[in-house]
Length: 242
Image (tube, rainbow, N blue to C red; front, side, top):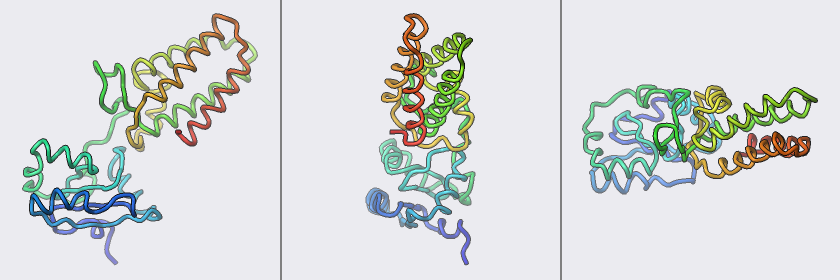
């Protein structure tokens, strides 16, 4: 029986790993096999092949695993979008003539740190427009726990509301980093942050949270209904990330 590495890697220059029927092998074949005279080898990952996907995810060390999963001479390139960017930038010929490396952890970029944020962002962490999917889930899980704890606290929770308000404002203006609960959520999923998705709908949700906390703190709005509503909404975000 062939090993997993042997199943993925051949002696060819390019490997294109599509997943079931979500994408077609032609995404790599057209720009590579034709214009650059490359032999492209495909290994189709079935949707039920949990072992293969888990292995790729472990090798990627926290980087999103998407399909097609394009590898050139042992170096991970990304999906079709990343391949098109490599072609447009003129980097493809250098990749095709680079020294091959055995497929493994060295095929991928260094692991993502807790404080890594997906581009684009302005001035470092300010106005992050992308967010990692699993960071959203973990951050929402923390919110579920926080709102449940606030419901259980009869008194003495005002100071914590201020902490939560500051955290929410930081997430809206910047992103999960450098917000305290955002950093904690990122640390909890450092090795599996998931794909980068747009942060705009989540920032809208967290803006609503921040406004509601302001109303509770300064305008004596009834807190119980707010906490119940947000605990339910956060739990749904944590599970479904709609």
